[in-house]
Image (cartoon, rainbow, N blue to C red; front, side, top):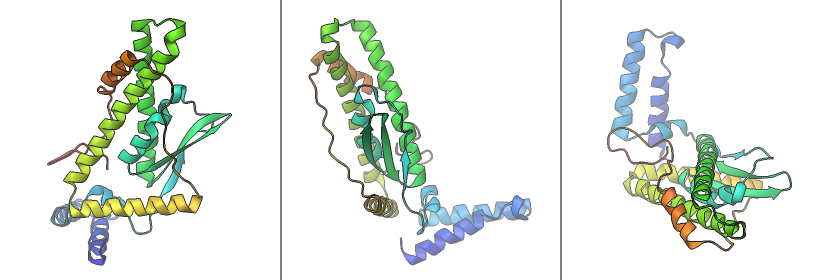
Length: 237
């Protein structure tokens, strides 16, 4: 972010701080807001960029230590969720649970925790529906579960990556610069905490039909909050 652009961002923040609660008249507050919006349009400054300052650093957001991960659903999804939310993810497997940690700017990391939990609930519910519909024998149930979870998580991950790529392709130069700033903040925090992201391996024997059923279910997953307004693309912050 260039020095001139930083000055514009600070000016917009100052304008938006002129509220009735802070002693301005309603007319003064509305005039200041109109000027702020005009500056945002002129310099293509987003709400996300206003929230990001030079001093803001990445944080770690962890699930509760006793968090469960039935059938390793969160483990399968956390990489794609992290990528979608401009974060990095890791999971420590301890006796008391399998808590996932996201490293990112506060709003991004909090959204990643919410999205991962929401998607895990979705996959587990769809898995239950599949098992009820197919009623596999006990000897085949593990393959059926593994196949469905793989297919569903792979499809959801593919969709998340596609949305990320679509957002990157539509981003302005300022938007790409904002992504670079976020990435640098995340890398610095990961290095500070000595966290490394390892590759994910989706092992285990899988039933082919259940894998296809899982992929079909993955097409129905919802990812939450898209950007709204003119020329919006389905991306987060």
